Length: 481
Image 1 (cartoon, rainbow, N blue to C red):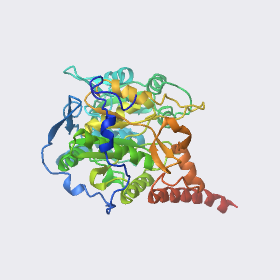
Image 2 (image 1 turned 45 degrees about the vertical axis):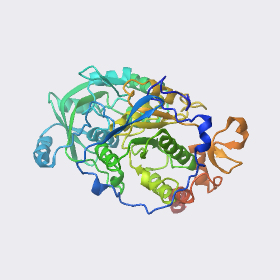
Image 3 (image 1 turned 180 degrees about the vertical axis):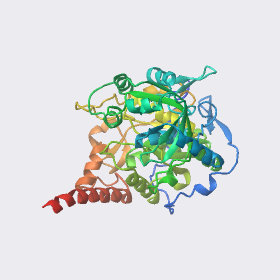
Image 4 (image 1 turned 45 degrees about the horizontal axis):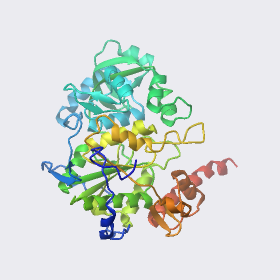
């Protein structure tokens, strides 16, 4: 799969390569933008609630018409199951009277995802019929016969004691880890949690060491409970980052306010290096060459559960801010927001979920690269998934036909030019591949990466993070000594 795929063959894969005779007309590529001040509280908040209707426009590429700007969410509307403020008092009293299900933090993250419409048209935790469709078909069939993508089961597990306490009740109250009432789950259905089947079909393996499995599925209860959610108030984490957690509706309004005629989403769970920036800036440049007037980048780091050795969310968000402050990405054409989903590391199965959620947020282009949502095999020295399968699956996935998939070329460090550049196989010995693991090792050991790998401000954030970690790890030893 490469950038030379034609629209006429696979309609939702876009050819961003230009004919060789046109390449000389494109100005030399540069990462630099004029730096401008970055808000440390989200500057979008005051303007996200205007009532301006979405503006739709079209651009013709290679003879095919592509819908741009805000594309229709799955199911036609963005789901919102947050109780209106005027009803919260009565709903809370009702929730207090119901049998209770206590949520783990991961469950709260999924309540957040469902409540804001990232999983539209899903309105609650899956009942068995939805669960089986998701698990076996990676999609849901709507009442009108249309199919929407839903590659990850979004379910709530309970144990035998909780099931017994619920009894014959039709509704239950959902209680957060701190004991706060968060939601009501209506018209519930309880069914068996076959963990082995869920793991095998989601990850393609039952090997030990899968982070999400070991943290949340293995110790979970033997039952799943589904139903429609009524969330008593918006989910907040009070971690200093809530202003970055823009809902799909808020993002759509901001895209419209900026009069975007293309929105291209880039998901990541690592700090942004100059290779990422090269891909994002080059994508925008090529979209302009294709005829779009105002493509907007949605830089959308994953904000839910990540494995222990990943860089924490607060550090990543500070690093992303430095990337914009240093002018590596243009603040005028970039929106940085947090995608609240937990991470499964389920490769081609999970990348469909990542793409589908961005449809609901209003993005009509999705950038996909090597081994999206992948990880190393937990027990063998190899990748768990074929690194090319993610983008191939996205080109064929049911329910994603309206999303334009942008496969990108591989970027690596060019040791001759001393900067990140697109990999040239004809001189492969000149390129250095720096993985996320290698990058974290550099920062942890205090070794600087090659010049041009990452902006200085962003790298400093990482180094300070690992210095703090090492100081915290050394403190108990010093006390015991």
